[in-house]
Structures are given as C-alpha cells and as structure tokens.
Amino acid sequence: MAGIALLVGSHSTRAGESVFAWTYTTDLQPKGTWEFEQWVTPRFNKEAGSYSVFDFREEVEYGVSDNFQLSLYLNHHYVYANKDFPAEDPANPGHRLPGAYVTGGEDVHAGHNPDTPFNSYHFESVSAEAIYRIWSPYEDPLGLAVYFEPAIGDQETELEAKLLFQKNWLDDRLIWALNLNYELEFEKNDAGSFDRDGMAEWFSGLTWRFAANWFAGLEFWNHYEFADATEPEHAAFFVGPTLHYGAKRWWATVGFLRQLPIGVAISQDNQQFAYYHGYIYGDEHEEWYVRLKIGFNF
Image (tube, rainbow, N blue to C red):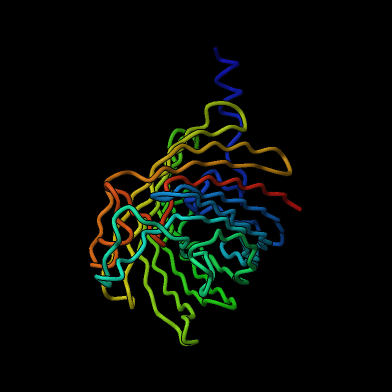
C-alpha cells in the first residue's frame, strides 16, 4: 500500500498542462519555454434535424516570465446543418411556425438557402492571449491570474477578459479551478455593419490525480448572453467529466459537456427560436460538446 501511495503521489501537474478541457488553471509556461497545443471541439445536436460543428484551434504558448505567458492561435471550423432551426411563421413575424424547420444556426453563412443543407469549412480568426499570474497556488493560499484575449476575423472581432482562480489540496492531488469570463463580440450583419453582443460566463472544475500522470474530474459551465451587450437573452448550463494524462514531453485532455434542461430564455426572440423543453438551441447552443486538447513541450 505504501508503494501505491508513493506512485500516486509521485507526479503533480507540470507547468503549462491543461488538466481541464474548458476551465483554465493558473499554471503557466516557465520562463523561456514553448508549448504547441492542438484543440478539436465537436459540438452537435439541436432541437431537430442535423447539426454538427468541429472547431479547431492551433496554439503556440511562450513563457515570457514564470508569471507571464503569451500565446498566438488560429481558429477555424467545419459545419454541417440541415433543417435544425425553427421556421418563422410568415403570418405572424417574430414567432415560430409549429412543426416546421429550416437550415440555420450561428455557423451557417448569411444568405444560405434555408431549404437546403449547409456544408462548409470556414477560417474564423487569429487570436492573441496574455495571462499574468498574481498569486501562485503553490506559494499562496489561492492562485489568481488575469487573462486578456483579442480575436480578429473576417466576420467578427472579439475581446475577452477572465479572472482565473485555482486551489490545490492534498499535495496537489486535488485541484479546483474557477474562471469568471466576460466577452464583447462585434459580428458583421447582412447590411455590412456590426452587431454588438456580450457574454458573461463561468467555468469551474474539480479533478483528482488517481494514478501517476492521470487526473479525472468534473467541469461545469454557465453561460449568459446579452444582445447589444446590455439586454439579457438567455442562460444555459452544462456539466460533464474530464480526463487528463501527462507524460514527460506531452499531455492530452478530453472532456464532455452536456447541456442541462434548466436553461432560461429571457428575450422574446430566444423564447421563440432558442428555447425548447428547458434547453437553449436555436443559433445559440448545442446539446453535446466534446473537446480534445493535446500539448507538446519544447
């Protein structure tokens, strides 16, 4: 038993590893080191029809100092959609037509024929990321870091800020993290101008090192959307497991999130076209999210 305990306790997370699929910790790249990460995030299932998206991200991280990290990454996706979005009642604009669906969703190009399937790859944006750690969970009672990320693309520009918290217990075998996020999004509309949206959300995760190099845990996501960054539209909730493996020069994390049937549609538009039996669909969310992250240190 002593040997097993030694084996389980012999490895803690290495700097820069992502032990969660969605939730950030305050662990950063050490000064002068690099890391490459590949993200793949399938998300699928709407209220009806077929809808699936594969989001891809390639990221390079660099440790400017032990407490400051810079990153650059590319964002792109592939989407397939067919008859997944509630149709509008032509006799009653702003309301859905019962039992009728068209092809739509946030990743479907404007101007697409809603009576036909949509199938496309799109390069979205280039993003930069800066994280500064104020307190370390290994030296202070609580880890704290601030995060800022601008993203520029052909259809939208985003500005995102986060507060990152982390707490470790039991010789770093048990890790808890919390992220408080706010994002401003400027998206090009059919007229060529930009619509402004706001998003406030929080992620939290708890994970346990159950064997050498292995962590297993649970993550929770609560997302709020605001039209014009001020008018509440909806709140959606997600939960699911996460699994992490860390080797000497590489690591991998996979996570699953399922939307819970406790969503709240606040705006009239979301009540008509996004809310369905407690879920938020429409052009807002999917039922299932899966994420695989693989990192290589060099």
